[in-house]
Length: 193
Ligand code: GDP
Ligand code: MG
Image 1 (cartoon, helix red, strand yellow):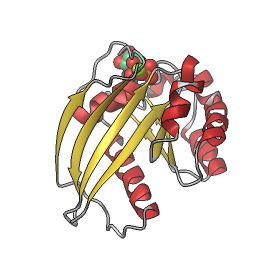
Image 2: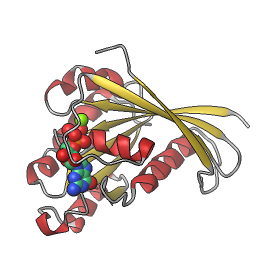
Image 3: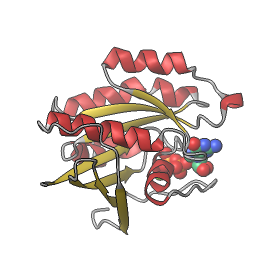
């Protein structure tokens, strides 16, 4: 089977859980502390689909807010997919999703896959953004929507699986439901800070 490489990036405001998402997915670990992201950092994991296809997944992390005009813009051009993340307990992070979509559209090509992620679903008692609002926003853009928790793991794998499938379909691959049979990960620090 052919080898493929898929590159993803997490985008969204500060503290929505961009770094936590990557750590949870790669290492199945959660830290209650803020994970500082200096410049840019990435993690890799090899996944094997049901049909035997091997995929090298690279997840790029960014520092949120500020410098997306420079760092993220360059990176957006290089990735296959974007995990656009907000925090369900933080209205501002949700309201800025449209701003993020605008800046993505300024630099990306049309065949990039985007998925909307409402993170921190475990904090339902502090929820400020309803599931419906998230769903509606995603429908506006015609992209999939999931609520996730980096704490209890809710939908973390599902999000990666979904965007991986979308990307492979766009690449013209006919993968069946891509159940991940095995995986192995390694961590790397990038040089371009
Ligand atoms: P980033 O700035 O977007 O990279 O955010 P971080 O990954 O550093 O997370 C910011 C804070 O939110 C940290 O204190 C995390 O522990 C916390 N956090 C991230 N995801 C979740 C989640 O799903 N549930 C809860 N309860 N806290 C989370
Ligand atoms: Mg971070």
